[in-house]
Length: 230
Image (cartoon, rainbow, N blue to C red; front, side):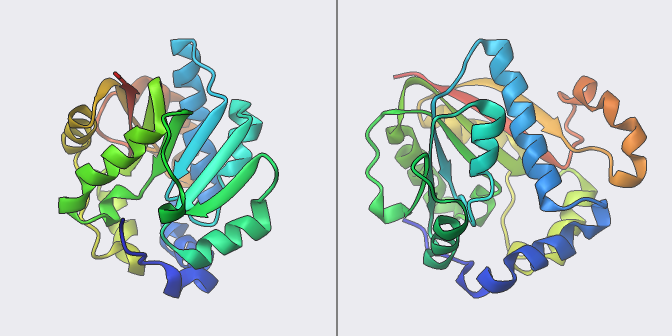
């Protein structure tokens, strides 16, 4: 469906990402955990508790344990376009509860409770994005959710970090309204749009106010949460 851009970075993926994120004072695990914790709070407010998650663009699979630990998810299916990343994910995180597949090897069947996607759509050619949303929608049951995280191009820190990461330099970012339109056109009701990760580690004492600022378009990343209508 989309060509892989990451095979050449597999051996140095984490190191390359860490180099880019270093200016924030945090590593990728801080942001991964923060995203899932925020999603958990959003779902709690909605009274939702997903049992199955499809992680589209799962990379090396490191978010799968967080879904089990923080969301209480029973089953995770991770998909990626990179065969090398899928192999690594299977080796490190593959279990009876977490499995990893190439995108073309997965057949959507409208059964998963939630799809999750982080920092993937800015790598997808603009002309293919609607097609990818439609593919993901076919995997989600009616009434299920799509949690789509993207980098916020309005945040100067985000733009700077992306410029430091080779596989992000040529990415075409999405402003929040573009992401909302993509999901709406794909059959999703927009439930919320939140912005997270405003303060770097040097200013971590101010992070307690981030939840109160989550509706302001300031954070380094944003979440658009959609509910599948039918």
